[in-house]
Structure formats: structure tokens, C-alpha cells
Length: 272
Image (cartoon, rainbow, N blue to C red; front, side, top):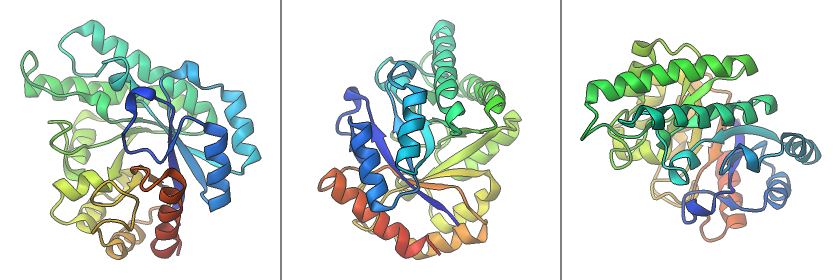
């Protein structure tokens, strides 16, 4: 059975982005426990913002798991990505991701690579960009193995990347690169833009799907857009998905209400 999670952003530069809770980690954990979530997903500005011992204690107090930790601040805050033409930037990007792996791994959680994949174009050809991205997924996935967690790679919609925009393309990248300790993040918002049939894409992704962002078509909390969650839940049952569905949605109309709306949708469709 899938598990529920809710996002918490600690990055001021990401203000306005699709994260349910903001800034106050203890308060967000208390709300997550009260609403019945199984876990939280943290979006930190960097490893220095996370005291692993303190977070472990906080999770224990509120009977929560850490579902994942995002690396997006590497791009949003530090302007780093894995396919930059400058090799120094690419190295710094991998170092940043390793630091997040070293922070999340001891807490039993994977790191997510989304916006830090970058874009090809101008000084970087499509072929070269894909080669660098694939090599990074292999290298960083191997690094994450020491914590017995995978690396999570997220296909994004066409407006945010020109690498992988569908689950099928993400599977092909992992296979061609030989990334044996990397899985895909299936984000329902991005999928709603790019996939002609979301349940079919989930079934085709099968065992490569290691994390899901639960959100509606308009980036609002699940149940406040036009996605049909019943066939999505059926597809997840068909692939025996038992990992996290994490609410990465706008805090609409406010953080608590967004989290409450999400857990109600999760309980209705996915907690079977």
C-alpha cells in the first residue's frame, strides 16, 4: 500500500513554488502528524540547514518518516546544474547533490534530482547533455547506494527541461546510461502536461517508479483540479507500488487546508 507524505520548503528563494508547508519544520511535522500523514519531504537550501540528529528526533516525536529530500535549491539558490557547459559548474552541482545524499541518506531517504538536470542548447548539444546527465545519474546513484537508498530522477514538463519529459523517456535514460541505483519520480502535474494517458504511463514505468508527487492538474492540492484519481490508483495497484505519494502542491488556500485536502484525497483513492 502506498504511503502519504507532504512537502516542506525551507528555501526563501523558492517562495511561491508548489510546496505545502514553509519555513517552520517543527510546526509542519506537528501538522503532518495531526492530519495523519506517514512522512514529510524536505526541500532544504543546503545541507547546512539540516541537523540530522535534530530531524531524526523530530521525526520520532511525530511518528513520521522522511520520504525524500529535494536538491532543487542547487539550481534555484546556487544556479548549479548537471549539464552546464562549464565543467567546474557540473562538478559543483554533483558535489551539492552528494551533500544532500549525505544528509538524507542517514535518515533513510533518497535525494531527488529535478531542476538540477538543467537543459541542453547553446553551448551544449543534445547528445552531450544527455551523456553528461546519464553519467551523473550513474555516479550519484552509486554514491547513494552506501545508504541503501536509490537516487530519484524526475522527468519535468517541456517548459522546465528539454531532457526527459515523460516516464517512458526517463526509463530509457536510466536503461541506456546503466543507472542501476536510480528510480523515477512521477509527478502528476508534469505528467498531466506531457502524458496522453497517465495510468498507461504509470503501468509502463512499472518498477522504475520510485516516488510520486501527488498534485492536481493546476498545481493545487489533489482533488482541486480535473485529474481523475481512481484510474491512477488502479494503475499503482497494478504495479504493486508501495512507496510514497508526496504532496507537492501550492498551499491553496493555505498550507493546512492544502495538506488536509491532500490527505482526504489520498485516503479516498490510495489508502486501500
